[in-house]
Amino acid sequence: MSINQEDRAMSEKKPKRPSKFQRFLNRMKEKKDRPVEAERKTRKSQKQKQKQERKMGKRPRLRIFPIWLRIIVVLLFCAIALVAGLMIGYGVIGDGTPVDVLKKETWQHIIDIVTKTE
Figure 1 (cartoon, helix red, strand yellow):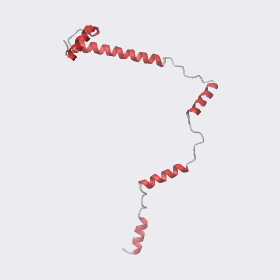
Figure 2 (cartoon, rainbow, N blue to C red; figure 1 turned 30 degrees about the vertical axis):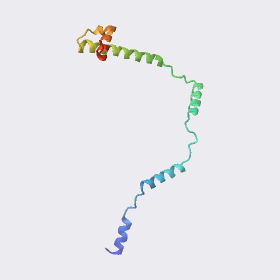
Figure 3 (cartoon, helix red, strand yellow; figure 1 turned 90 degrees about the horizontal axis):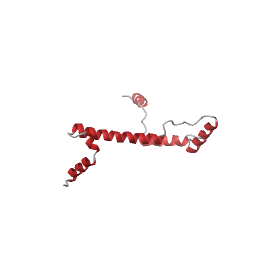
Figure 4 (cartoon, helix red, strand yellow; figure 1 turned 120 degrees about the horizontal axis):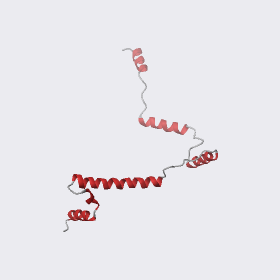
């Protein structure tokens, strides 16, 4: 190769990509150069905005099914599912009568078997 061809080959090469650290530093410099937001959304500004909306006539959301009632209903459904599962397990999978699950003697017998006390 002649000197001109080498120069041309060098000029056609892609520039070297900066390292990860150098790119990180460049991003940090860009962040510093960005203008600071004039109005950041803080809790206080959100509350003020809500107060203004209320004054303008927007009504707050009215819950038809209150949260405390939801909690009670979920706990009730959990209890019903537990009892139904126990009855199916004891009556269908096991060889007992499903209603026996609700008796205290059945549970005392199971506890005695588990703890091996007679």
